Structure formats: structure tokens, C-alpha cells
Amino acid sequence: MSALAKTTLGLSCLATLGIIGYVHFKQQYDRAKLHEGVIRDIERQQRRKLENTYRLQEQIELTKQLKKELEANEQSSGT
Image (cartoon, rainbow, N blue to C red; front, side, top):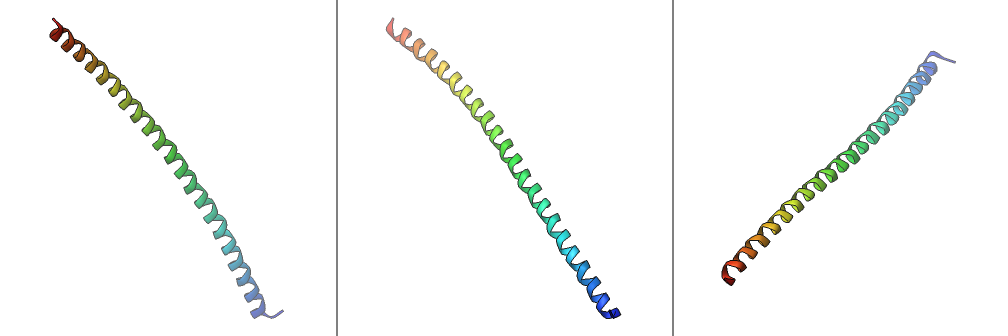
């Protein structure tokens, strides 16, 4: 086997290993990014749930306050 053939074979093997290594690295990187997206979605859902709970509590308090005011107005107009 000539030196040129050995060099060509060696460079071809190195290029092939480089490409395979890059593809595996890229797959793992993409999987990690996808996983981060899932985690962000879960955090966003939790924040929305807390916000909705807070708004519900506000609505409950406002409803109680309105009922008290209506009862007070009924009593003052009824007497």
C-alpha cells in the first residue's frame, strides 16, 4: 500500500469519526434543549396555577365584600 493510499485512508477514517462524533454530540445537545423546554413548560404551568388561585381568592373576597354591602344597603333601605 502506498503512502498516498495510507494517508487517504487515514484522513477518511478521521473525517468519518469526526462526523459520527459531531452527530452524537448534536443529538445529546438537542435532547438537552428539548428537556429544558419541558421543564420551562412545567414551571410556566405552575406559575399560571398559582396566579389563577390568587385571582380566585381575590374574587371570593370581593364577592364576600359585595354581599356585605348589599345586605347593609337592604337593611338601611328596609328600615
